[in-house]
Image 1 (cartoon, rainbow over the protein chains, first blue to last red):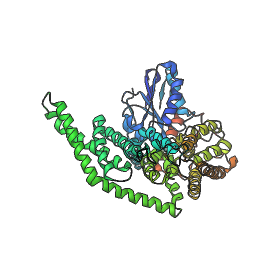
Image 2 (cartoon, rainbow over the protein chains, first blue to last red):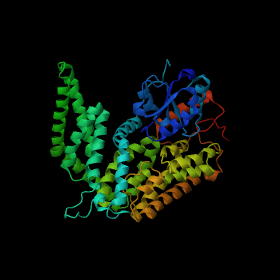
Image 3 (cartoon, rainbow over the protein chains, first blue to last red):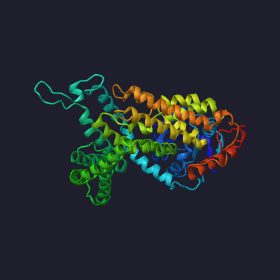
Length: 102
Length: 404
């Protein structure tokens, strides 16, 4: 289990295979949700997850590769591109500054 | 921030194939804008296009009796492979690798007759890797003040050598391989075996190999074919939005009730936005639905073979809008038919597999055939996490049977 301190998240990265399609879509959704929280939301390919990311969201099918790149940064896998509970949980934790286990 | 992260296990076969395919696709995808530009110019301005212009499309002669070069030929022969070679080189060794990769790519371009996408995908990274190794060996020996001189000349010498090697040696080899690949595709088309490709493509897509399959393999082959024949069916194998549309519609009407509200948005994103990833999770949740995707995909390919449908350039992303933009003049009905047939077949099969919603509350937790062990593991992990934190929300089959 990894913990994420929602109040310490400054940069959230959404990763997908190419960093051009689905990650852009989810990143724009999350960016709107976190607009007031001063969190940078970026999208990348799983090969290019930046080292200064605080938390990484990626589809469960890509999570293994994302973990290989992200190192110690927590990787949160999700299943649905729309309304996945894992994504909602991270967003809520950041909005409310809660600490969660992922 | 975290003291402990689960062991890194990015070594499975799926991850390896994804990574290699992602590497190939990574050379093509950043340049899709150039492919689209070429596709639009081709569809509109060539002799059989919507609005033929000799000077742009490159047919006919000018007042002095010289043949127009046009934009179409030079763009696909030089611009697109050079961009791929540059991007491939940059992935290995930054801009410097990109430059050397582009120089080397010119060699394979000139050395052969057909558009050298595969050659560019080999030469760009190879040349960049060589200059990277040379940089590592030379840089720490370079005397202060001579860095620029050494850097420029090592890049120039390696680039020149690789361009010559590409022209004389590697180009002809890649040309032969391309010939085999085109022959194999031709054989599959001629014998109506191409629909079998759906057996590989549709499961591959759902495992996030979609970009690798399409942009790593099919786009380069298709572009070569399109230059010769004016269109290619290969662009439509992976990108056909029909199978995904059928599955999403089946989910909308017959899927688990909790998921139904999210599907109309998914349909729009998939069909018009062209982000196919949106439907993959729906199949991963009900793996038996892969049969619907395969049969829909195969039916679409068969339809396209029978109608002779093809696209001028790769529709990227696989949206109906991109499809219509790169369809050659007179081909729209055939292309739409291929999408419609794929969508109907996949919808019907998916609806049957979902039991028309009647067996919807039933759980299919175990005993469902799964295409990959990794996938199961991944889903189990997700399930663990969800179960640990959120018992109430059940959106996937791995969650406890609260859905009923």
